[in-house]
Length: 251
Image (cartoon, rainbow, N blue to C red; front, side, top):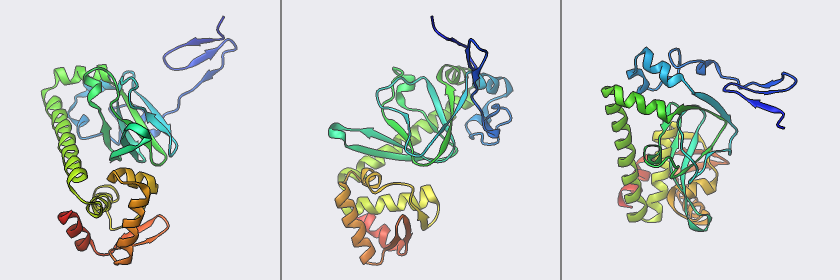
């Protein structure tokens, strides 16, 4: 006979001990959340209480898998701290890094509303916390709140437009243009500065551009020799942003 009795909040042994799941101060409940997404600001108190049902928080160490391509999709994920990558796993162990997700952004793959499967993988780039929201409760709010539904459709469309742009860049630009795009994306969208400390490995950077690691490093070295960027370990500074954008433009 099993030594464990499963409950909603803890796993109790026969001796009365339990495994407790701790929450950070910003994840006690959805009504008082100090990291609430603009999307969820459209919900009323009752709807937020519904979202709060069956919701839980998970902490990840850098490098840990959050979910894997092909696995079951039962929750909407909201990153509340740290940074993660979303990527496609291709044949031969090759990955394509689609985008980087940072607070306060949502993971909502198309499979969550189609066949409850994950069509991409996600992993932490640095120590992160993620809020898991029941897809079932999320869908109830979509059905009852038109403003919330419209904002969610906007979110889905923006992600589709971003992906379309990535396809064009990766299929129609030469290698220097792809590397330039990756550096501009990191500077303007992720780190918000021309000087930043990379949290991605060289392989992950190569996965952003659909290049081999060796090709990516070679082009990066060329940018450094031309004075477009300076590098010291993982510290990067874009010294000639206009030149980098010109390389991106001409492909």
